[in-house]
Length: 98
Image (cartoon, rainbow, N blue to C red; front, side, top):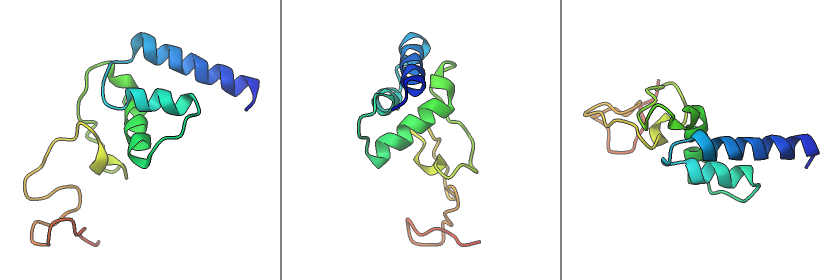
């Protein structure tokens, strides 16, 4: 790994530790930046944490329903009947085709 990338990763870790909220995805984001192996779920949590700016304004739903990871967002609000492309008339877990 190049020196520039290593320095950038360390700066990101320091920033998260200083201003990032202790919320779901924080530890996973740091784990990734340290170059440690992360699971698919940890990668999703870390991405959401990063995308939401470390939840510095509070842990909440991002409300970006067009994001392919939105169904896995750790603070997504539950929606009754219609959940991110799921038709309530279909069996649970079967996505509606467009």
